[in-house]
Image 1 (spheres, rainbow, N blue to C red):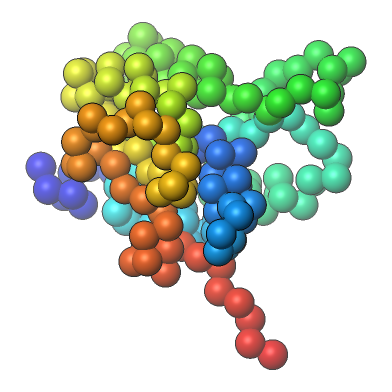
Image 2 (image 1 turned 180 degrees about the vertical axis):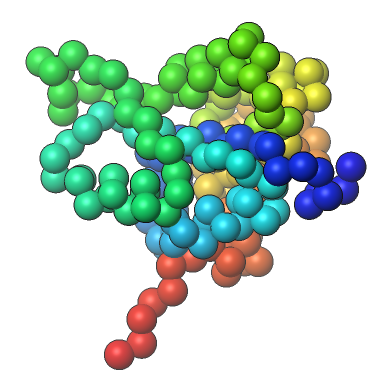
Length: 178
């Protein structure tokens, strides 16, 4: 099937920390994603029905960010942490995303393909498995330079870079002119 012609029933899984570090916190030419525009892009380009946005753990200081994510149409998911360890742990959501994808596969939930947003090599086995099962659409790497080398053998059909000029132009938060 051609892109854009299949039924809207794909699911996106976003590693929020990886996305943030690969765009707004990158060392060279940082930029901010407009979450609403990004959601529209995912729906139009990849026929997303739902997009799950995974973050490390809840911090009251980020309340406005969480509202923005949800108001932009994402399903927000936090990594569970012991309250005594809050703020001391890395927000590593890799295993949560892998578990949620595999749970959907195991329960035979109704979806076509998975789109993953991350440059993290921890997802390589999942990507390979989903390709094998014909359930993988794309991995969108936030930053070309920070893509894991584990994806070197991945066919061009299965990835894109969010920092490519044409994609970035569609999803970047535009600076307001006074």
